[in-house]
Length: 242
Ligand SMILES: Nc1ncnc2c1ncn2[C@@H]1O[C@H](COP(=O)(O)OP(=O)(O)OP(=O)(O)O)[C@@H](O)[C@H]1O
Ligand SMILES: [Mg+2]
Image (cartoon, rainbow, N blue to C red):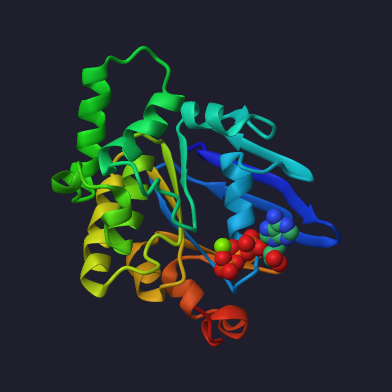
């Protein structure tokens, strides 16, 4: 089987800081991959290079066989790469419906009708449990629901790869259970790449885990392998973090 996404020597410097440092990475279609690692390890920078939000200093990104290293983010979305931000990025004074409709209208210019857009938006809101909030202003949703709304914004783009950056941050325990169910549902027809600090969520969801430390991949393996890895214990699992 061909990987859906690979990186070769992917690097990003900020001044003298090597935030992402020569990363070789491969993601198989259909898998749920978690990225974990200490604060500042380069996780958000890495997925920002995959989504096209920022450009690499060196290296390449290949998606479905095509070199997308310098492709703008909106074109990557059209290829099927969707991304939600670590920090809530919904528009507070738009309704939940309009928040989801906006990225669809902005990027999927394939001549879909208003009705098709509407159905796609409602389907994404339904999958995330927000259908009954479609008309609510996003700013009036709970923080947890705003995070779910971001997932809906990604889902409405019909991604082949959905990248989620700390989606459970700020969710209540009951919402986390629903989130785990939702990601398993999404993974039936998409690949999911998830940055996550909540280890129970990682252990329950991930097929494989990639551990970042100082901009490099420290370890990669199944949840069992990562749990048993002494280096990972030292760098991350044993340490306190948010
Ligand atoms: N735009 C930027 N300009 C300068 N430095 C940056 C920028 N973005 C990230 N960095 C630095 O790059 C390093 C990696 O940051 P990044 O946000 O990728 O880490 P992270 O693993 O996502 O951390 P966290 O778990 O806290 O979200 C950090 O030292 C950070 O301060
Ligand atoms: Mg981050």
